[in-house]
Image (cartoon, rainbow, N blue to C red):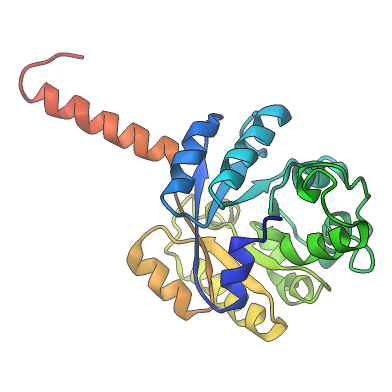
Length: 259
């Protein structure tokens, strides 16, 4: 069975790099996986990819020993477990503001005794029934992770309580939404943003859970790692494609092509 590459590194105190896909082509994910990336981030909060396609994207990641983290739509309990049944190793829940909400999602994604996740046990995450039932339950709890996003001012006073929720694996600071909701409109370098990052890094260390956030740049990432952030996200296929084609267009404009 596939163990989590992300958790293996984090548990050893090693940094993890996760990159993002906005497109729904499993081939892109397979390409990224062959380069050795730790994790691919698939988003259902903002992207309208259907479940069958996501299952194929997860399968492509698994074929290259790369973890998949799916940011879910916060619809209901089954919003999370469907992706886990596909074989995703991580679930990210956006806009979590209270410990009670974090606890709900932990219970939804962890089997008893850590939670109350519903049991099927016949899908990709069980190796299509290749695992003994009790071993499957233990393996799933150990080799999957649940991350909650801090993205709103309302969450800031509750960070310590959220981090104290039993069996929560990670707090992830969503600096984009946080900057907007705090009135800074994308200015992620404000002191107020760094204050939240410092608080999360400190609390995560105290509570023995992992901390994650976008790295943005090498310099920023180095600073974040020093603050205790080991789960780093950076890059996206849509960014690299747009930048590369924009540069190609610019080069040809310089020799007289019109667009």
